[in-house]
Image 1 (cartoon, rainbow, N blue to C red):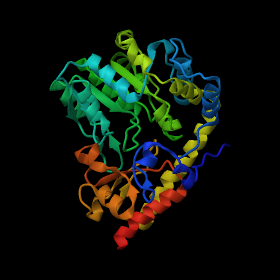
Image 2: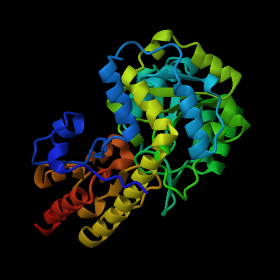
Image 3: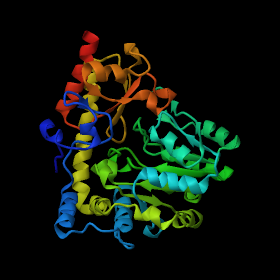
Length: 384
């Protein structure tokens, strides 16, 4: 059983990525979605081999990436997907924009389901469309898609929906029944569903995950998925994602994208993704999931003991915690005070939509020591 543990803080501070360069050294950075673990060995080997051989040219027109992802999806999700129905691009955001440009007309409305990953709002605008908000429903114990609200949006003229599956920031894994229902509603109105599935490899064991394109015949007809190894394997800077389809009409849309969309794939990103999706990396990913499971429970215990005013539901996927700090009375954006006075950088809740007022997003993809120190610093503000 492989144990995946975070690197020491001193070593992490040698990194030059956004997480470790945005703030001074006295700030604990738990905001952006980067993790603090060493690379999976297969990825390190692939990248070292490329550097040593000078394999730093253009991405080839024929690569093993699609087949590697298809095999990964079959092993991890029980999903059979055709490699011939995939194309690569630089990252999930770029894939979303390029697909939305083809399935919407300028000024048409795209449904988003806040609180949601802040760039979703900008990606819709970049594609020339307009955002229509249909917030998640809070049942009191979980979040779920507001299917009635989505139907009403389509009835009112919205032409597509940008789905987050699993959902960021709540860590919600949408049920198969809700995805089937969403697909049937979209099919009824001729709407497209573009599903961001970047967090899919991080669904915890015991929680069933349904790729949107595997949610029935209607999902195949209306759906596009954009996937990547970047979140699970911490490869965001290497630039590689896949646009996936499951029907002739949607496949034609993706095949019709300009070749430059595919050529924007990074060579190192592709080599790293092939290694990540290989069976050789499964043991590392399983070890990562065990570590994240321990961290999500640790965070719950720490908040209960030190910040009982905080409201937090353990996420089913990912390493992002959505925490309601409204009970502390620190205003709409408590992360500002926490950054200034506790020297802990969290993602600003209001950036995720109006539903994020009073909330913060905390990245627990790090060591137990850093998580503990962060909560202790925040709790000290209350004691003060």
